[in-house]
Image (cartoon, rainbow over all chains, first blue to last red; front, side):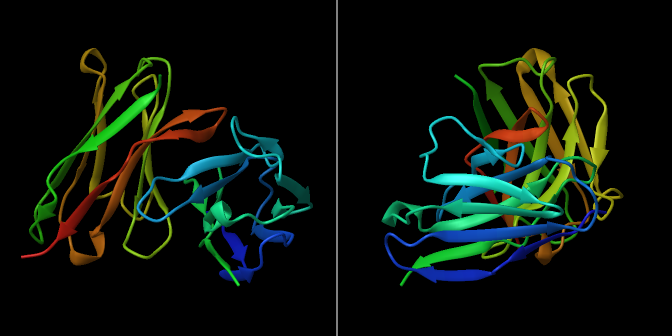
Length: 107
Length: 116
């Protein structure tokens, strides 16, 4: 199975900060990487798909990038509504596998 | 409008079988794959399995011996059955529709507690 190592597990940042979360894939996953945002009591919401594509309705302060086997989600200027858990998912191979998640909080 | 909604018992006794239904609207099960994902309280997401538009299935190997996914396309319903439930199967269970090989649309989730 492909392992997705997500870091950090938690992150505290201030409003307006630039925030980056990373997932490292244990095997080549091409660009089959999705980022989800999940708020308490809610379902995951797709934010970025294909490693770099912004999903419909997602604010432009969110972006995705890839460097080798490292995939990153960046929030250019943190807003209060961005406080949530973030998960990455590889979907190139079954079983699909998620990262362990990152809890993003306000400092 | 694409919609998915999970339903099933909120409480299951240990060693019993879990049966969940995902009722979909706004698309046909003959055109899209539907996945099941679960999330234990306070923990991360775990992919459980998928039923393809063709009716084929793939399962997480960790659950394969206990899990079955099927569907009734005429009723727009996907079914999950998992036997021999234990307390560690307590989780919110989600169904999700695929698009471009990822999970684009999710149901609201249903919490299943395994307890006597």
